[in-house]
Length: 531
Image (cartoon, rainbow, N blue to C red; front, side):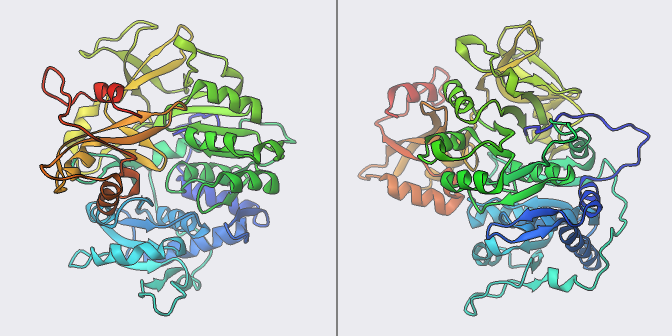
């Protein structure tokens, strides 16, 4: 994750207040300020947002939600999604988001694996609900409720009762459920090789620390932050929304990322803060409207999540000004390092821009394969130690033990530190492909492709374009007499795993190149096959 603001550690003698409780206290302290502007332009005050969350928390508790239970959200970029997350947190439940772009079978497996007791669906995801619910029938089926009146189409299948309407009679006050720093906050999912994505268990304490620091601009006359959530609230946009609402700012929601709509919103809404993956930043740079858009309100454009092109980042600085903030992190570790706007002249080998210096309280060590710490400037495996590390992979102690040892997390990344402590990333040790919308592990796609009648052998790998954006490629040895086509393969993968896993390029080969030890030589495939 990227840290939008500096962080400070709370004093140990302070009463612990969870992040959801803290955010709602901030909202009630200034109830008349605008907190959320929805995608259709509706403005919601801080007081109304907090009152809805408080009432919903009471209703969830009355329905048996509490510590040890899981509330799973099938939601989009809506105010109801924020309200549901805060309410579930107040009730003491762990929260799980079902990401858009994953297929119904994968979402169903995730829902079951996290022991979902309550599934909440908002208007943006009503269309996804029937296919998911059809796979959840059985004795372990969770209770399903809607965050709003449900589909308006009378022909649409009923999903569940409107839980927000049902909560209207409850008091607009904190239910007072005791939540401690070691209680479960939620489970985030990333790619995996076990059939479903790995669940990363997070606790309230580490997440709460992200709210203890001041804004980057502490001047008394500074404009309250105004964050444009143009990417999914289930990912980093949700974290930014939480921090901005706590600091007295407001959030403008968009249903999805469209560069023209983003630029128009920056000008219209006087946006101060934006979070983007590098490929999305490039789409903004390449949009014809960027030159005529008033960008003067922008104070921070945070970017990260995958490799970026140094040339394009310098171009972005020229277009947007000195407002770019680079962040390096991961769901297993939260924030690791940040590069402030004034530090973007910090470059390493080949003109590569640093990903930043480790945050206070975060230790970074570069080690070789046998665990020996390497000297400054020498490239090796990046290990991290901090109070923000994950509690572990959900129900996977074996996977947890592979990456967490003696309080240190093996990030799976390759990099080096310079003499001033700036971190540079060279590559990923793991074969993870980071695409817009999520993470793809090649093994998952390879195992699926081998079930297709047209595929005899295959290797899936990531290819970076000139702007360092990654794309999924598949090299396939056709089954005898078969002639697989890209469109068919993409449809097959999309139906089974979701669109983010679908190869963008299909290469038909006579044989898969192998390394001396017999593994697919994906480096050679990248070098020899067309991009």
